[in-house]
Image (tube, rainbow, N blue to C red; front, side, top):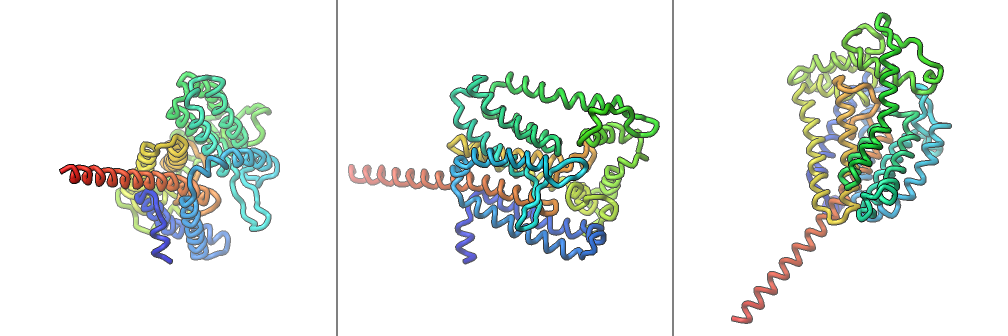
Amino acid sequence: MGDTLVKKTKGDRVIWAIVILLTLASLLLVYSSTGSLAYRMNKSNESYLFKQFAFIILGLLIIYFAHRINYTIYSRVALILFLISIPLLFYTLLFGVQLNAGSRWIKLPVINMTFQTSDLAKLALFMYMSRLLSKKQLVIKDFKKGFLPVVIPVGIICLLIAPANLSTAILIAGTSFLLMFIGRVSAKHILATLGIALIPIVLLVAVAVSTYDKSTGETKGLPKILASGRIPTWIGRIQTFIYSKKNDDNEKLYQINQAKIAVANGGWIGRGPGRSEARNFLPHSYSDFIYAIIIEEYGLLGGAAIVCIYLLFLYRCIRIYKKCPYAFGAFLALALSFTLVIQAIANMGVNVNLFPNTGVTLPLVSMGGSSFLFTCLSIGIILSVSRNVEQQEGEEAKKTTKQIAKEEAAIAAAQ
């Protein structure tokens, strides 16, 4: 049975190796970084290790079965998934699990598990976008026929996700604009939309700067209209990022300072596996800030290796994009790889204080959850495209071999 499973496993071998490598790394890192969490929850570290192992097995099964499906089927279900994701996002905003004045999760009634509806919406959006871009290539430069049908779904999803999870909405918008540019959408339409989308971001930064009290490190005089929902959290994170070097004693900088300590302790080669000290003080060291633990335990060399692995993953996906003969598969592989790599870059950037805190996880490495499983599904879809490309290359090679054989037989008969 094992041999049969291996024979049926197709697709880019390098991507499969990357998946195995990152999931094995996640086992070590989750086991190392969940000590304080286990203590708070009165559980053992081993319980989280076994839980992560179960998520990895389930994730690998999802990748396997997703890659066995012909990727053209994803084109057929793209619109259905997109339409399903819209009411789910509405439901999440109204009745989802609350965290810091934002609703990101809904709880599934039977298995009693929470999942982020934004993960499903993101996957559905990129599947639907890939379908639209592939079908509208002849009119893609036209504003009404080409641009609007593509950009409106992006706007709907981002507007529904932003109130609870602005960072995810920004990452989705950025990936979408990048995909539209590669899909030959008019650059002037993209730039105009990007300019409009940046207006609220610029206003948010301006409010954060103008309401920051440098003497106390607190927000002052925030208008009532901006004091509701997640807006104070966004303003606080922007202020923390801008003024972090000028006021290190601010309590809001606790996470960032602990991450800096972890990075500084790591040096070039790290303290060694399981020897992190920051894991006892750094909140969410097993998810949002797991990259800081990687650097502390494996050093800058280990951190650089993780960056190279994600870049190699992107490179292999770009190869799939170039080889895929059909536009939908090419755009789908590129969109899903972009969103995973951009998410990884955002997570690593936050850990080394290059970006404001976003709350996004490190794909395939952070502790398992719905995000981990949707990441596996995305990789499975990419491998489905890769498997189809390999099959077509094999068929073309057989045709070429048969053609050469016929020509040789004809020459021999003529002689």
